[in-house]
Length: 89
Image 1 (spheres, rainbow, N blue to C red):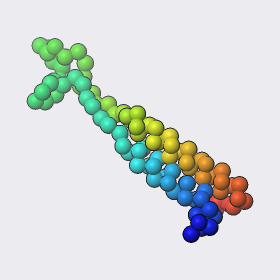
Image 2 (image 1 turned 180 degrees about the vertical axis):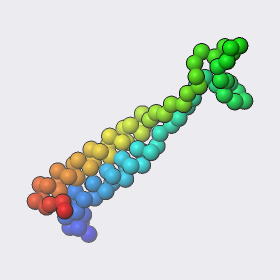
Image 3 (image 1 turned 60 degrees about the horizontal axis):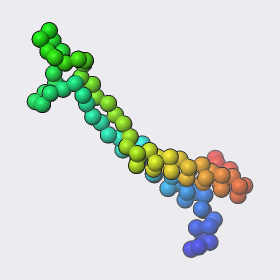
Image 4 (image 1 turned 135 degrees about the vertical axis):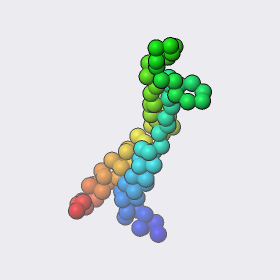
């Protein structure tokens, strides 16, 4: 079993990195501003709203860290894969 893990270590790193990076790529948060409780406050002549309501998306710090870790695992796996003299078809 250990021989198989050593033989396919680069491939395992690439698979783990791909999973971690893909999972955290779609793990974003969203928020909004320019709204009131009970619905959106669209600006009108008598409204006190400054701008249009907007939604924004962002990654939290944990997702950014795991995303970069996944990419680092993929690159490390590729380096190990290339150092063994194998080719990617």
